Length: 92
Image (cartoon, rainbow, N blue to C red; front, top):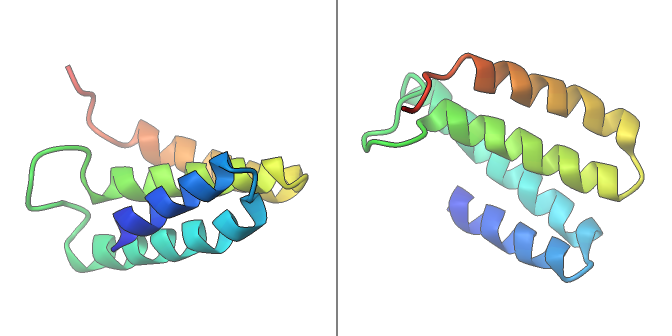
């Protein structure tokens, strides 16, 4: 569900409808955060892991807020995403 919300938000943002995309990115982030806390931050399949999805969702939400002219709200989200990415294992 979170992935679908994220994809729909991306499409709406790409169509110039950033204001419609923002709540979808927020919903996706909430779902990923809830799943990360329930599963100990690990997905049952190989890949980025749940923390990576949370970090990407934070990044996406920051991008849309910046595009809406709300850079001050976007900055802490970018910082939080960067910190999460730095804590992820490196992919070789």
